[in-house]
Amino acid sequence: MTLEKLINGSDIRGVAIKTEGLDQTLTLESVRKIAHGFIYFLKEEKNLKHVPLKVAIGIDSRVSGPEIKTALTETFVKLGVHVLDAGMATTPAMFMATQYDEFAADGSIMVTASHLPFMYNGLKFFTKAGGAEHEDMDFIVQHTDATIEVNEEGKVDSINLVQRYADDLVGKIRKDSNSQEPLKDMHIVLDAGNGAGGFFAKDVLEVLGANTNGSQFLDPDGNFPNHVPNPDNKEAMASIQKAVLDNQADLGIIFDTDVDRAAVVDSTGEVINRNNLIAVLAHIILQDEKDATIVTNSPTSSHLKTFINELGGQQYRFISGYRNVINKAIELNNAGIHTPLAIETSGHAAFKENYFLDDGAYVVAKILMFLPKLQKENLKLSDLITTLQQPAETQELRFHINEENFKKYGQKVIEEMNDFVDRSEGFTLEEDNREGIRVNVSAPFASGWFLLRLSLHEPLLVLQLENDVEGSNHKVISHLRIFFEQYKSLDLGKLETYLKKLIKAIK
Image (cartoon, rainbow, N blue to C red; front, side, top):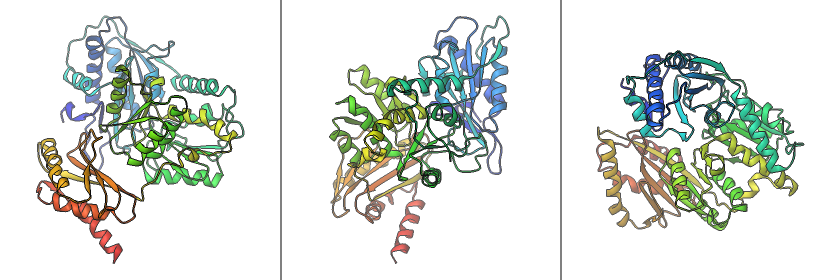
């Protein structure tokens, strides 16, 4: 397998542990090659000529993490690099290793595959300027054999990065709240999903005065025995909901494996993720920053746009992919458009005030800063979004494209859907759209919208739908089937299965 095939957007992903039906793709040899390419990237693309370079390495709880870290470390030492071994860490903390003066790393690597199953692993790269881009990954894998001058062997030092990062969060929350224990008398439960985020209970919440009894799955376990560590997963969210209700907690927090994403649950058990999380953070931001623009990915609810507008802000819907929304927010700020937040429905969120770092723990910190104010007013977190209308039903279908040039074929389908929309009563194109084709839906298909877009990396067309009238999405999908059936290279199996289940349920 070529190294290029391991590139997943702006990081590396692959199978690190061979299992039945899955061959190993992220080998230790490939890790060593990529490590070599990263040092060449720092020296040549980032023009870092001083010696020695300092690179920090951290891992999440995956069982393949230690041997990958060893392969990275051995390669770096041979190349004369001063390695900072952060041990168990989080993705946002690894970026901060380049920012904290006591570490001052020139670059850093987080060994993680985010929420993927235990057999996967990967590498996320940072420099002092931020996270790697896709083109950086291309450069790295294309220069794995480049000549690097080495004068002397490097060395390895261990650092307690996560404690420094936790102390930083505590300091920021205390400063904003003007209190040493702003969470005193609050009961907050944390679900770390056996990932790397368990530290947050003891080193942040308890230090700020919170009672964390009932917190669960804090111990790292790369087999993820309890649930998928993913705030976008129904089973995971049901788990933290139950923990909140069973413990009569004021708030529940859940992280993904490497803590670059988070979601919360309020005291009533209401889940605050996806559109609801965007709305809560928008409300917090727009309290003090009227007219601010918030960048989101494209498949957000139409009601979210209304909600943000009514608060005095603007929503900018952009191409899916957390690096895409973050880079668009940076671009808008550089153009003089105040844009303090970039966030995806998946939970990836980055604030301008926090280096536009994709950081789940900082998302929670922003909410914790706001909690004491809500408590004084006897309000719950969900009270912030009572005016956000919720759709009656949502649906997502993915169609595999059986073509070698799947992007060209998928784009052809999207472009040709324009004519179908024009001919369909109740379908109108949404003008505020920058990805695929977004269509507003009205009678005879009730009230809602759908979006057809290409997956960023896979040979898939993704159809996402929302409707305000129960039982209406299937009407939209049934009508769209007329359009999709003419494309023989689309696998419509999931569409047919969905419709058959609905017909059976109706009978």
